[in-house]
Image (cartoon, rainbow, N blue to C red):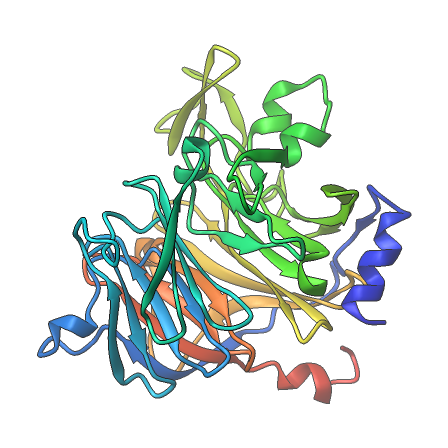
Length: 378
């Protein structure tokens, strides 16, 4: 069954929970590095002040948004520098900020400038085409930006403690059309449980079926990936894929302030202050060849213990494998693992692993999942 067929089936079983196979043993999942961007200290133009988001084009060019320089740095498929687009300034071709970027089907680059409140378009050669003002609520968003089949914009706000819902904006006017997420669909009487994995940290989404459906992993990972489908111009909840990383064994709980020591976060929900000790954070969710779903989750242990865990699900949401991300090319341990986020996957199934430190790096590589094809147990 293809992922597209699975999503169609999920529409009729909204709320269905796919339970992970608890008897499976963890399997270390290896990341094989193809190239690393941001290493050459002799070439400051190829380094990053900050990596906001990553995209890749149909010609395998890599676009990396750096809000420190208000530019998009462009690299070839082998990591060679191809210059940059934008740069801080007030001229039409310049940018004042970079909140998110998107590549259209023709490789035109769309840049969301959250400082000037503009959305700018550049042609495939990097030449400025046009800009337009956008609704102020559209400007303050996270790095997740995508376009739906009808040309509307889908964004995920990432203001900790304020809003981390998904929002749909009109592609022409920039006016808000529709907001959705766990807060909108869960009418639990326990407002803490309803919002504990939503109000503090952003998440990740990935469009499937050309934007007709999507996968969403809330930032404070609640132990499930939500599946939505576009129906009548609005994304509706279609189903849930259960992760093994879920409360109470993993993923901390949110409680009223004063009832937990040394919280990781504090926030205000409905006028009441809450604090939280966080056990799990989403670090990426992707579809692999419309056949498998890949979920990356940062799992906190006691003290400085951390693991970046990978879960692989089949097209129907069935658990296939899980285990820590490992590599022969690099090693991360303890708090340093908290700096890692998987920001993108290209059409060649290469993942873009970003180390968000004072010296950001972008590692481009593949997951070695060959054991899934060779082992009859999978």
